[in-house]
Image 1 (tube, rainbow, N blue to C red):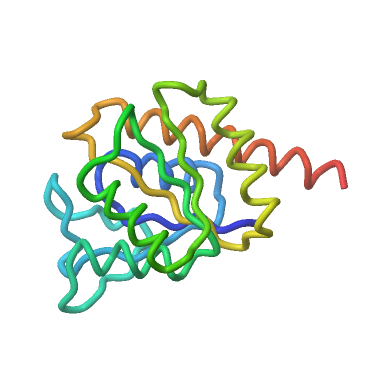
Image 2: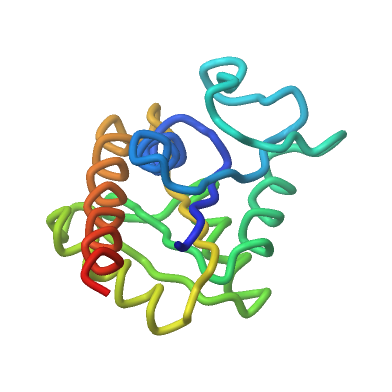
Length: 160
C-alpha cells in the first residue's frame, strides 16, 4: 500500500488526506508549527506531524523529501506554493507528476497517478496543489482523483 502524504492545507492537501482517511488508507505528512492553514488550525482528524519552529516552505520540502515522488495537481497554471513544490522537486531531483485538472477527468488523473506510482515503485506519495482560496474546486478534484486511485489499488490487491 502506497502511503499518501500531504501538508494539510485547504484544497488539494485536504482532498487527498480526506480520500485516504475515508478509505482507511495509510496517510500522514508534515505541517507548519501550530498546525497553521489558511482557515486557521488544521483539525486533529488529519494525522500530521508538526514541524517545530518551521513554516510552509519547510513543510513542503519535508513532505517531498519523505515521499518517493510527488503528484502536483493544478488548474491551468502553477503559482504560489504549488509552483514552489515543482521547483523544489526539480532542484532536489525528486520524481513528480503534473496533473492539470482543467485538462484531465478524474478517472484519467487516477490512471496517471497509478502509472506514476508503479513506474517509480513508490511506497510513499506526496500530493500537493493549490489552496481552496486559490481554486475552489481543488479539494473535490483531489478527493475524487485519489479516491479513484485508491479503489484501483484495492481492486488490484483483492485480485492477487
